[in-house]
Structures are given as structure tokens and as C-alpha cells.
Length: 154
Image 1 (cartoon, rainbow, N blue to C red):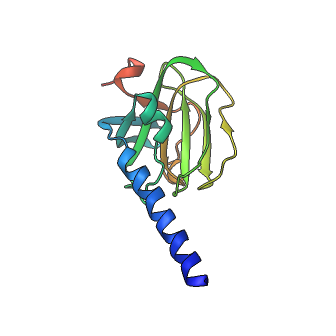
Image 2: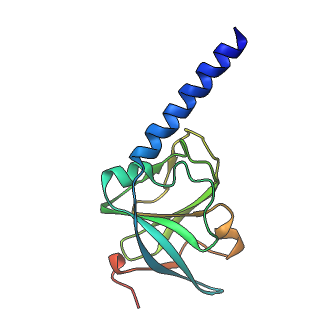
């Protein structure tokens, strides 16, 4: 009986994973730069632009390259809320004003947590990076993210 129950659980888990895998979004990539007091840092980011891409974000990823991330650019400026449901890796979330200035940073968001993470200031965009990147590269509130959506790309 125990074997049968275990088999049922494994099959159900496999079917759930396959359903998610079939729905996974693909993302365009772009290069961004973050200007910090310690210098400029370049990142290759995926762009979450459709509602389905925004909903998925970095869910189900088991790793993220050190110079990679995901950028969410919204049509308006507002307090942004994110969570880590189905996100397997810790993330730093940089909340960005319309001019590219970082207005808030949430470091090392806990994987799989359903706790809501709100920005303390209104933001137009959110950049997700590997957890610990902000501290490692001395990225601070007031630093500037350079990208065409902020009108400040070089």
C-alpha cells in the first residue's frame, strides 16, 4: 500500500512539473548597466514584458548566472509587490524609478516564500538578481540602472 501511495505521489508530481514546463515562457534578452560608486556593472537580463512573463518571472529556475537577471518594466509608477512562490533561488530585488534611479532594494528574498515583498517607494521597474549581488557589488539606493526604457542608455 505504501508503494502504491508513493507511486501516485511521484506520478502526480511529475505531471504537475510537466504542466509547468509546457507553459514556461521564453524571454527576450537585453544588456543593462548599473552605475555604482564602485563603478559600472553590466548585466545580461531577460525582459518580462507580457502578463504571462511577469507572472512567471524567475519561477522554477535552479540557477542564474552571476551577471544575469530579469527586468520587469511597467507602464506606470506605483508601489510594486512581488513574492517568491515557486522561485527556487534567493533573489535581490532592485526597485527602480522612471529615471533609472534605484529607490529600494530587498536583499536575499527567501525561496518559495509566499510573503509579499512591497517596495518602500513607488517604482516603474524591478530588477531581480542573484541573492547577495547587491551586497557583493555595493549596489545601493540612489545608484542608476541604465536602459532604454529609462531614457538614460549610453
